[in-house]
Length: 378
Figure 1 (cartoon, helix red, strand yellow):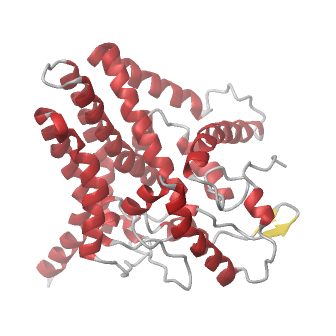
Figure 2: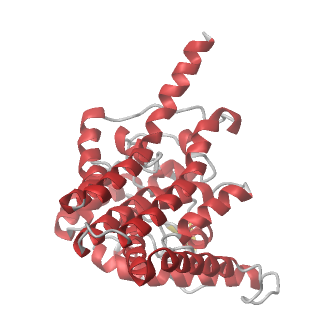
Figure 3: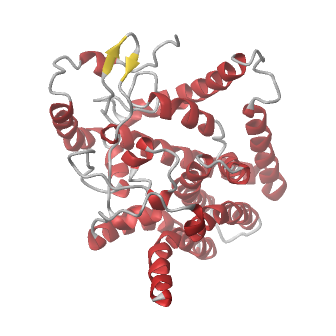
């Protein structure tokens, strides 16, 4: 019985380690060069879309009361990724700038693939780590974000997004009919500003200026500067340029996912600037098995916003009567988001159905549709 239970636990945790297979894959593409450098984007987007089709949905739920002691291999997974990504990123920077078999375009393609890894996996793991109470896990999350020059994501996500999701005060909630190419430049600026203002206001409540050493932006800037300096030491100006390529791709990957997760979903306005509490219905849910292995259950986003402190293996699936369901997993939906007419054709009818299901009493949605900028702070 003990051996059977142990085997069952290993069978449950092993699929979530699939992301580590991308490390030997990207090194093989670096050695092979040529068109092989496109293998990583293809394996994360198209291969996992096919695997989702083959493996189906996972509608089972773990016991949410499971203590951390029963999750040690899941926790190790997220902790191990930071040093692995660090060595891979800077190892590739050294290799690409000290070899002559890679053309300029091959190098750009290689670090496009690295950006897919550091965005799809790295930022996702940092998201899991930043939600934990342990200092070491939060530091690992900060290091991962510094590798893509997006450190403020931690402040924005914890202090703004989770508090204001589904309202005009949340820059990350994509509005109905707002195409990704409009959303993306808006969110880049507004998230940086809202993160800084949130930390500034937090310090002000303690009667401290924003320049106080307790402001995490000092840590963010120091870590990011350190990453850029290291990129220069490893690969010179070419190393810095390739580092920036992967960082840009990673940020784009993150914001594509952010766009998908809450598109068109809003919390009901109760008057006087107040909104209803966050519920599972305020995030799109996806239960495709293979992409949830790759993304450590990020697609169970409805439960993450409902219970933000739950570790990823304990996130619950919510059925259609409790949370809106995406027709496909993130690999397919993020590609669709890049084509706004296709996206609107797929998602707008679903948003309208969601409104009829959960808010039949709301007859005028124009104020929600027009609110493309955060409300002023009260």
